[in-house]
Length: 115
Image 1 (cartoon, rainbow, N blue to C red):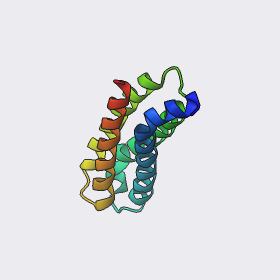
Image 2 (cartoon, rainbow, N blue to C red):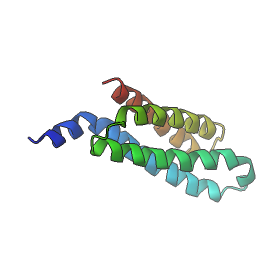
Image 3 (cartoon, one colour):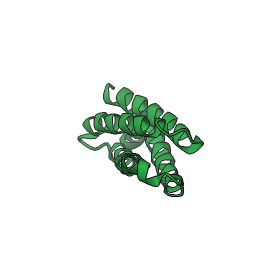
Image 4 (spheres, one colour):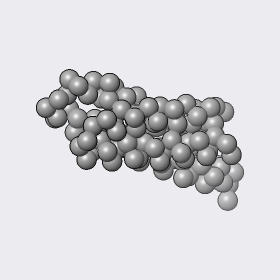
């Protein structure tokens, strides 16, 4: 096994969590755009995009064993926690599911950062 695949294997749970979280955030973003109270969701929608982009970048950083992967994942955890809080304020299913995925991703990112 090459060094790269060993490193990637070590981070795989976090890479998967980040990928899943980015997808959940983009799906929730899309669903929020169609909600009648879109105006009340401005900070949620903003948090969703920021979280999705951060998760995508974290997955990329870990995949290449980037020098700042751990710091990146710590910040990613913070952004995921924030997004989970924003989503949790809305009772529709897509926001509740997204909040759960964000919390799970934040946990994986903190685990990865402490490896």
